[in-house]
Length: 261
Image (tube, rainbow, N blue to C red; front, top):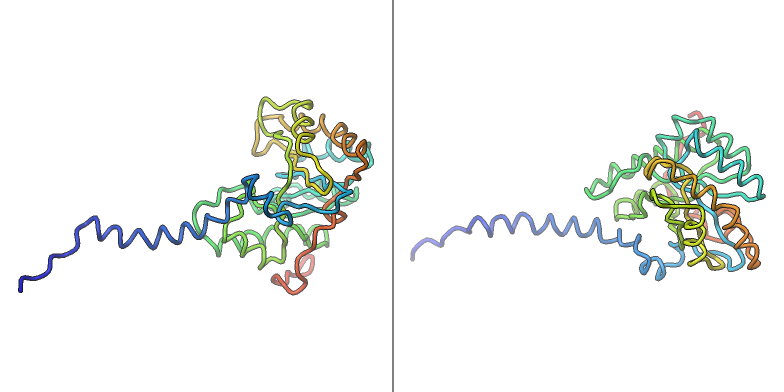
């Protein structure tokens, strides 16, 4: 019998690429969580809490220029919020972090830096999230409970990293679209009002680190009106800690060192 012909280059390439494609799909498929329709089907992940309460949250800080302005505005209207912070900014701006906590606000984790997660790197995801959570714990003496991934993209690696770090992923139900150069206080307030419901979690940004320059001023200007809209409909406003979202399971997570350890 004649020898069987070898596989063509195309078939050999397919044999190599197919498993890689499967790995990539398993990594990125959960990232559809950033889509509104997916969040609506996952109320716990979206941050749906007590129907008489709205959770107010901010991403991407701390920022020594803009975050103090939000702290002053929140104090003026008598509201506390949850700030999802980036670990590399926490270590660069410790005084802003301490002041945020001193004023009664809650800190949560937004990651170490604001990177896209397209490449599967589960070990790196775990290290980065533990590092960020540890930075918050070391600086404040309080262990964070919540995690919101950058861009709301919750890959399988980030899911696993959150569990290892003992953090509960929480996204949002409505955002202010405050990251664009075209954002104004009126547009941010309108965007939030369009989707505002009791039990919702509002996403705003207290910095322009990952957004159009100075766009944070639109969110800052919208803040009193957003809170007024909530209160006018009988809704209280506060941090996730008061929102009725279940905390992480007590048995999950890797034990972080004590502050300073």
